Amino acid sequence: MTVLLVEDIGLLVQGLGDQVPLRNTSMVVEDGVITDIGVDHPAPDRVLSAGGLTVLPGLVDGHVHPTFGEWTPAQNSVGWIHNYLHGGTTSMVSAGELHIPGLDFTALTPELVLSIAITSRHTTARMRPSGVKVNAGTVLLVPGMSEEHFDRAAREGIDQLKFIFYDWNRLGDGEAQRYVRWAHERGMTVKMHSGGVSRSGSSRVAGRDIAVAVAPDIIGHLSGGPIPAPDGDLLAIIRDLPSAQLEVCSSMNFRATKLVVDELAARGELGRLTLGTDTPGGTGVIPRGMLRNICYLASMCGVDPVAAVAAGTGQTAAAHGLDGGVLAVGKPADFLVLGPITGSTAQDGLECFALGDLPGIATVVVDGVPLVERRSEQTPPPSRAVEWRGDTRSPVNTAPSRKAPAPHHDGCC
Image 1 (cartoon, rainbow, N blue to C red):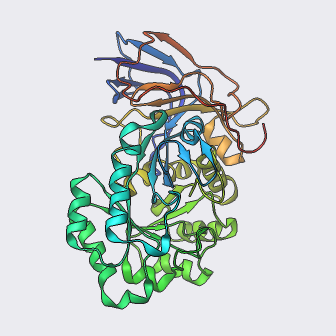
Image 2 (cartoon, rainbow, N blue to C red):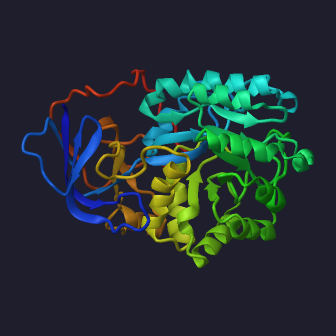
Image 3 (cartoon, one colour):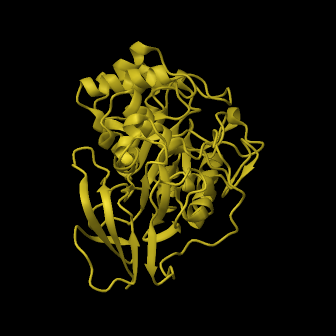
């Protein structure tokens, strides 16, 4: 058994909107799982001194579009997942493997969409690119699927489905509703593309009437992908689909995001909010996209920073059925150590978000293994340093190693 003790934590944010952060605490990790919080360990194999910085769960990007591994033809880019890791993302969920060259969105068949999802499940999802947990292999729902297609998907370990290219002219025949029922019977999560037509030009516009008729689990990029539904539809979806989780993304309409968040806050329903980037795609590759989402919610939408962090960690994980996103006993030890960069007036990571300041990431740990030890390639360093002591081996790291690509920076500095 390998034991990691994380000590000198200035602030521990657990990833749940209703939990008060813990100050001046510690955390024990055994074989990649959190076993204690607030206690020391008499003989750890390794110690991480967090330097009084903030520890929070690794960010969970609920909306990415992988192709194969770390290659995205959408931006002719290699190494994007490595860069997202350095931006604090430790888990991500595919919203469809859409960007395979030559894929004709107007001629998708049940066999084709299922085969793409199965291939992605057994390649990108299996390899953990750069150590990141990528839930890849999402079935794009199209007309003509049978229950056997859902059985095959379940046998292959697929648990995410999405409506995006579905022909909504046939909404009245009940097929879409059957898909949702079949998915739920197999423990699968259903997401729906909402808003206007996507970059491909082949997706279907989906507003309140379609969303309410189908009743998916998650309304994808409610505030724009790339444009949102009309304001009245946004408010009606929030009101008329009380069980649905509501996603906003970096590829968003900022005004519509504030409208959605204000309405959820007024209704006391911020726990329904989930976050993603909706990248790679036309918006590009945004390594700091999840940090930007949290900063925007806390600094411009008036969301308590604890709730903003929860939206990008525990709530997004739970909405997609992932085991993670929270720092609690029995949960995977996926976490970040971050804090104010030099020049910021913030005193800790939460104050950074409230001010809209980008925090500096010192360390990124996945399953108890440090994938970034002392300095992120994607942020300036925090004003205080972390220190590692003890055994430098990482025996629980099962991710294949690879040479890191040159750093990719979004924005300046």
